[in-house]
Image 1: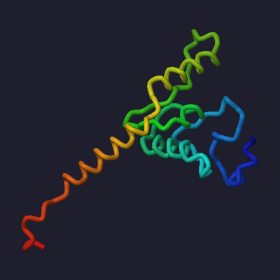
Image 2 (image 1 turned 45 degrees about the horizontal axis):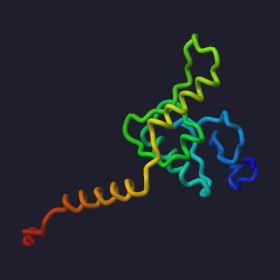
Image 3 (image 1 turned 180 degrees about the horizontal axis):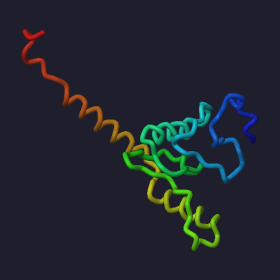
Length: 134
């Protein structure tokens, strides 16, 4: 597939296109978000990272994951030390390390987090012990 096959191609300003076969494309949290509804997981990851203003860049493989985005999450820093001889291998190593540190969330864990959030919200509701104060 190619980016031109996307129905939003003419209006899209996202530098990372899931339809592109270019493995070197990257996305920063300051960039535009993919708006193609066929790539909901990628768009959701982009939105979460943009909200947290994550530093560094993210590749398509990183954004395809449904992972937990917490405060302080970071992508890969593009700067390499002068001692690196093969920059492509170093970037691949960094991406592999990042993927290892950010595992995809399982369906069971996601459901548990949702249930915990709902029970916490329920416990914080005010009891109606004094209806005369309304």
